[in-house]
Length: 144
Image (cartoon, rainbow, N blue to C red; front, side, top):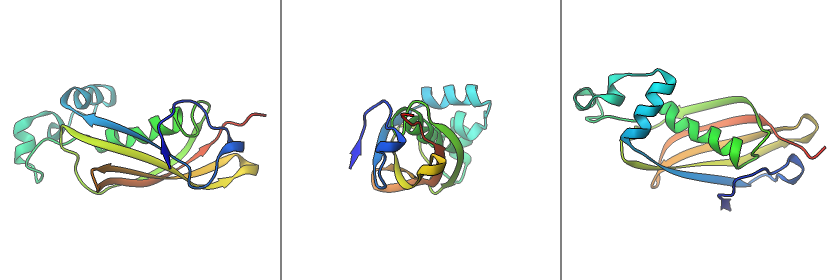
């Protein structure tokens, strides 16, 4: 089950299989803002001619822009506020063209309660096509 609530799910309430999703249209404004913040101004992301000349035939979004949706999910939705990132692994499986609607999902894969650690499977899709897949480990907030 996927819910889109913002807030905190404490370690004590997490269960393997819980998930949250976020859907975002990756448009020109978003890509340009990410380029400024990240300082990654690779022309394939910003210049129509460079994109057209690339193997993709068009401009594409930064892979890490799509990956940052997982950070938003973990920090805002599951576990949410108070979460501390410990690690992230990502595989970029397909390009994300400008204007694409991307749905990112994080799913609880493992809970190590005594260490307050939670592992997540991470997946971003455009429709049924997986564009980014990976995993993340966090310290989850607790009530105590």
